[in-house]
Length: 186
Ligand code: 5GP
Image 1 (cartoon, rainbow, N blue to C red):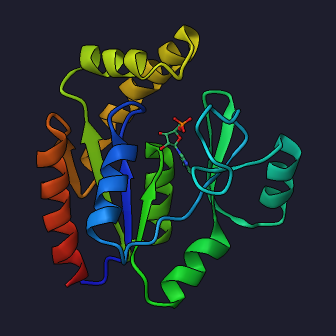
Image 2 (spheres, rainbow, N blue to C red; image 1 turned 60 degrees about the vertical axis):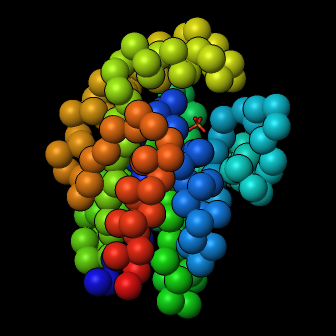
């Protein structure tokens, strides 16, 4: 199969980051580009590892210069995948794993209909999603409300994805996606 642009999406707090981390440990050949964001760096986040944290004017300059493959305004901040990182990896024959929001996932599917494979994670319930956002402790109450509002829309989009999976047990989710990705990479 020619699916070398694997995209993991789903509402904030659903566990995308942990799942991606586990998949990259299990499949070290996967390349995960580092996104740009204008949001504030949280304690523990490393510039160049979790994100490239940039000023709004730097983001705008890159967008104007056509350097962004896709971008989204999410919760008052901007997030983007840089074109160069993705093209370089694809040209070198690598498989990429992107952890991005639902809007970005759908944009990339439209741009790369042959290469993109869209995976969507759902929470067991919205109450559990709220609980996860609250217990991770890195978001203000207002931020959590906006993320939950966006989650409603994101959940309506899962029918556009190639695979939709409830993230109830981390191990089961990782095992399922691992097997699916191995099939896509074979
Ligand atoms: P957070 O602020 O929690 O790190 O990220 C907020 C949302 O932005 C998450 O759903 C995350 O997956 C998404 N996101 C991170 N990087 C990108 C990106 O490059 N493009 C898009 N479209 N979304 C992104």
